[in-house]
Length: 256
Image 1 (cartoon, rainbow, N blue to C red):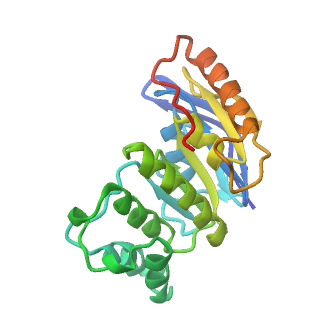
Image 2: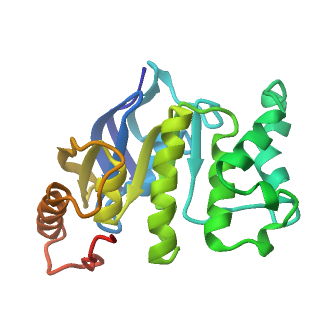
């Protein structure tokens, strides 16, 4: 089982924004790292079937990807919760769609417990903190038992402490749910904490510049010398790709 971009090229008008081949194996945690404008989010939209490539194919288990496939869950930086629905109703919403009405209703209660929001089941999104809203959005993204969870900078808008906590929480959730993760990020620390493999993208057009196998056991120690050495190597490669002294990357110390 795999999710594959095969000889994919994608254009907006006359501008080619992506040219790449990529295979994501079932069970893998892949981090897509790169500077702003290199096509990371476009790549994720292609994987989700939200856009069709200008050339090439995007295949899920050998068949063309279709938007709305229950094997694919997706979450963006903004949680996009419906403000007029409660937390439980937001998580349940995908199950109200005709194609998913056969899924057990107990799934919502199960996920509320897993994401620590059972006491907030009847609260509304404006009553939630940023971290709580992201947990609700993640629960909604996986309520249909997807095989793949596609994440587009899901914690970028959060403060450093909340982001660190949710990274660890996501890792545990992915393990318990048996999820394959594809995480788009511009945060080097996040890439190596979440990824089994880190792929660095270069811009103009977006392409795969280099990849690393992290090869460290989970849960990962943020102060592990091997992790810090890999972080330094990734930053050096990243600065080479963006061609300046840092661009939109400001190195931050790994949180203890």
